[in-house]
Amino acid sequence: MTPINQNAGGEVMPEDVFRAFIAGKPANTQRAYRQHLAKIAAFLDIEFESKEYFEALIQFSPARAMLYFDWLCNQGLKGQTVNQYIRTARQFFEYLRDVGLIDRNPIGKHLKASKEPVSQAKLISDRLVHQMLDLPGRDEKGLSQRAMLALLFYSGLRISEIVRLKWSQVNWSDSYLEGVITKGSKKRDVLLHQIPFKALKRLSKKRFQVAYTGSHFIFKSTYSGKHVSYKTAYRFIKRVFSEVGLEDGYSPHSGRATAITNLLDQGFSHREVMAFSGHESVQMVERYDRKRKTLESPAASLAYNKK
Image 1 (cartoon, rainbow, N blue to C red):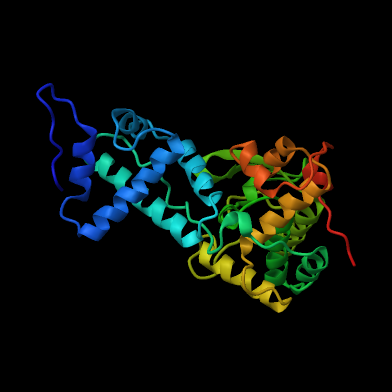
Image 2: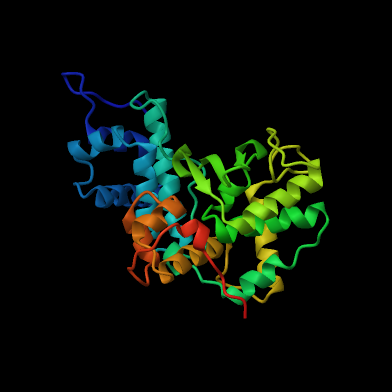
C-alpha cells in the first residue's frame, strides 16, 4: 500500500490521497479511476480533488452513497457503467478505511444496477401480472414461488430485500412486515397488500400448519439452510417472465417499476408512493411519474385489472 504524504503541519493533502490510491496502476486505469471519482464531485457539485471534496468524502455516509447510486441510475447510463463507477468508489473508500481516514466503507456491496438503466426498465401489463401469479402450482414450492411474485408486484420491495425476509417479520394481525432491511442497511415497516398477505399465509399453513412467527427465512434454500440467493431468485423471476413472453429488457426491477408506475397512474402523490417504495427522496419517484393527483393508502389500493 502506497503511504500518503503529509505537509509540515501533519495535514493530509487531497491530491496526495488520490496519487497514493492510483500509484502503480496502468495509465489507462489511472485515467479511468480519476474519471470515476470525478463523478462523485459532479454529484456533490464541488470541485474535484479540492479540499472541500476530500472533506465531503471523509463524511460520506451510507445514505449519501444511496443517493449517489440513485443519481447515477438517473443519468441514463447503462447498468454496466453505473456498476463501474460504484466499484471504483467502493475500492477508493476501502483504501481510505485501510489507511485510517474513515471508520467504515459507506458503499455497500448490495449496490448494483440492473443491466438496463433504471429509468428505462420496461413495464408489465396487468394481464401478464395476473398470468404470472397463476403459473405456480399449489404444492409448497409453488406457494413459495407465488408468494415471491406477489411481493415483487405488490409490496414495492426489491428482490434483494424479499429473499432476506423472515417469518418473524410478518405481523399477521395488522398485515405488515416489520423491520425490512433496505438499501443502506436501514429498516422500515412495509404494509402488505391482501394478495401477498394471503400468499404468505397459505405458504405458512402449508409449511407449518399455522400462521408461523419463527425466525426461519421465508424463502429458504434447500441446500444451504439460509435464504435463497439473489442470483437464484433473479433466475426464477426471469424464467417466469420468459414463460409469458417477456424477454429482452425485462428484469425483476420491471416488477417494482410496474407497481410504482401503476400507483402514480392511479393518482397517488410522490410522497405517498415514496413511502410505498422506500426511496430516499421524492426526486427518485419522479422518474416513474405520469400523474400528480393525491389519494390515500397506496399499498392497500394497488390493483392490476384483469383482462
